[in-house]
Structure formats: C-alpha cells, structure tokens
Image (cartoon, rainbow, N blue to C red; front, top):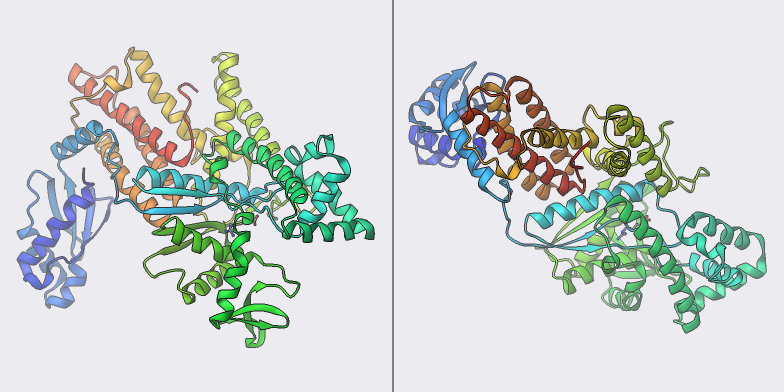
Length: 577
Ligand code: ARG
C-alpha cells in the first residue's frame, strides 16, 4: 500500500531515464507536499546543470515521458521547473480501500532485527525523577513501535542496584528492621529513606565505618549482606512496578538487567583490557586512553575502568552491557535511551569496546539522547536539588487536573465514567508531552497545557477518537462494519485520504530514526484533517447511502489509524470522553 510519494518516485525516475538516458536511471526526485497540488517534484533544477538544458525544458521532457495513468489526474509544470502532481481520486479511493482491508492499516513488517533497548534505569532506593520518566516513556514507545514493525526487542532495564551507597543503605535497613515503616519508605518515598541513611552516614564515624565495611562484604559476596541487599532491591521493585503500571509502561521484572548482574564479569573485562594493552594503570586507577578524548589544555580524558580503591566504575558495567548484548543476545542494533549529558561516557565505552573487538562494525549502537525536563521556573525538575519531585505525586496530580478538564468539558457523562477516564487522560497528557517534542530537546513541564483538549496534546487525540466513536454510536453501528466502498471526491476527503495513506511510512520512519515525535506530529495533523473533513462532509446526513457508507469507512479507518498510532506511543484511548 504505497504512499503517493512512494508510488510516484520510481515513475519519475523511469521518466528521467527515458528522457535523458540510462545514466540517469534511479535519479531520486525530491517529492514534497505543496500548496498548489498534492505533491511537487523538485528534480529539474538539479538535472538542468548535468544535462545542460534549462530547468523548464528538463521538466517538460520528464513530463512527456511520465506514465502516471490512473495515479495522477493532473501534472503541471510551475515556476522555474517544479512538477506539480495531483493524485487521481480513483487511485486515492483504491489505496484507502486497501489500507482499510489491511489489518495492519498500512504498517509494514520489516526484516527482523534483534534490538536490545536500554531504558528507564532508575536507581534502587532512590526516587525516579523527571529524566527517568522521559527515558521510560520514550524507550517504551520505541520498544512498542519496533516490536510492531516485526523486530525482536529485548527490554533492558539497567537499574542502579550496585555500588558504594548500598553500604549505608543496608546498615540503615539493619538499624530500622526490614518490617518497619521506615523500611516501607523504600517503596513509597525512597528519597526519604535514602536521605535518612545519608544523614547518619554524614553524621557519625561509627555508622560510616559500618557502611564502608558493609560495601566490602557486599562486594565479597557475603551471604547475609547479599540477602539484605536483595531485600532493598525487592522493595524498590515494588515501587518501580507501581510507577510502570500507573504509567502503562510495558516493563516488568523479566526486563530487569541492572548493574549488579554484570558484577561477575567486571574483573575479567579489566584483566583482558590490561593484558591486551588497551588499558593501563595511571595514578593507581586502571584507565583506557582513547584518541580524540581530551579535556582542558589538551589533557587526555581516560575512561576509568577500575578506581584506585579497586572499585569498578559505571564505564566498566557499560562495557559489560555491550558484551552481553552483542554476544549473548545477538544484537543487531542496540539503543541506549539515556540522558544527553551521558553522550561522552557512552562514546568512550563504545570506542573502547570497538578497540577490544566486542562491538563489531555490523552492530549499530545508538544513543537516543534524552533532554531535560524543566520546571515552570525553567530550572531542572530534579529530586536531589532540594525540592523533591515525586513521580507518583506527579501522576496523581495529572489525574486530578485531567478530572477537572473532563468535568468541565463533559458534565453530562456519569460520575463513575469520568472517574475512570481521568487517569487515562492524565497519563496520556504526561506521556504525549514527553513524546511530542524531539527527545533530545528540553521542555517545560506544564500540566495545564498538557491536559488541554485542544492543541497538540494527548487528550486532544484521545478526544478525536472518542468523537469518531460517537458517530458510530449515534448510527447504531460498529466501526468494524464500516468497510465502504470508499469513494474519494471532495477536497476534504482527499486531504484526509492523503494523510491516512502516510501512516505506514511514518511508523517505519520512527523505527529507523527513533523519533517518536514524528508519529505525534503525524497523528495531530491526521486529527486536524479529520476535523476538516467532518466539518465539511456530512457523514450520517450524507445525501445518499453510498456517500454515507464511504464516509463512515473513512471515519472507521481514521479511528483505527489514530488508535493504532497512540498504542505505539503507549497511550490508550477511552471509548467515550
Ligand atoms: N541509572 C542511571 C541513572 O539513573 C542510568 C543508567 C542508564 N543506562 C546505562 N546503561 N548506563 O542515571
């Protein structure tokens, strides 16, 4: 089910070859939407230089050879040599019918790749903050989309479950008892627990000493210590899972692949790098010095893989993730959905892994950079900087604000229904706000804007689907029964069909470029095209039964495309709203 651009590109290439010879076979014309026609081909200007003929003449020669019978209803040359193409209504109708008959509504199945996706990665006994929220939401949308495109996605939740803070956390847990309310904080208000442990650590030598020996015992695999550590991790899992289920995120316990799991291989990694001369001891620490990484005054910046106190660093664990994902999981493509500030870290890890031969050229690694989320003061929304932001509270607040919006917009809906819809709308608002801007840019977290039923928001798209469903409810029909035949005639029908046909391409593009905001932009523009269609083309009051059936089929197709698209973003759409 080709989009107009995909249908026309090879036809124009063929015409170019026919007009100017085989040397030009495969010349890729640039096609873009135009205000004068459905599409505009911009190729004559570039070709004019190569063939030595004025651009308009080039365009004329291409058009003379162009076979678009049954595809375009008009082909015109405009300006200095643009080719304006208007799609044929019959062709649009047939394509829309094909899309409607396709259970995947035009989304292709790609050749399967194995794609581990590292995302979410909160830390044990710490609050998840806004940046964790964003990697979770973006990573989950990518996981859903790539899976839908036919890939084998392996979710990797690289939680921070190892390291020096566990000494003080375990000692604090021992002091208060696993069954205590204080221990319960780990899964309700982890920061409070963390800060209480921290205060004791900073406040007294005896506790700090215990904490330090506890880290040693943990590293040495002491059974009792490991059990206590596991207790902390388990409490945190409860907390993570509550957030994931509130946010409708697909991560579960089987996706946990935290720092601790790589513990057994870290020494071996260091040894291997050292014996092979890739790592060397510098100031007591085992370091990898790579070309091209220099800091101030040209001083080389090392990737430290073993600190002078013998502890392994974040970089060592991440080297282990590469080995595991390449060798054990058989990855073709590895995504790290991680904050932008970690770009240097990741690049050093990858370069080290390449040097060691652990990251073959055929395996693509991508840092899906996550930009900052800002508070209304345009400062970082952070936990550690004094003002604790609790993710669960954020979710609850979103639900509350959503409830107010629904109460105002739909006082006619019954109370129980409004109560069920509110969390769905609140979560959609948060997730869509994260997804609709490029993942590497920063944005201001503004609940009122995010929850609005107008504008480029999640709730607006949910509302659009509910409106389409209400058309069917009013007609006493199931959307699935609206199968046409589809006949595209009116300008607003044409615009809607042109949008609908673009769905598969956009989803494939999101899978390739890893940019969910393109799907958001697409869905928003589709919803607007639908509004335009619904305003100017009566559906239930259409002049005759054939027109009504055709328009109902367009409504049903629009509904399926938006619901499918929202689903790939991890957003559900209530039936009524
Ligand atoms: N736990 C880390 C944090 O909270 C993020 C880990 C990201 N993943 C990784 N493989 N380094 O900042």
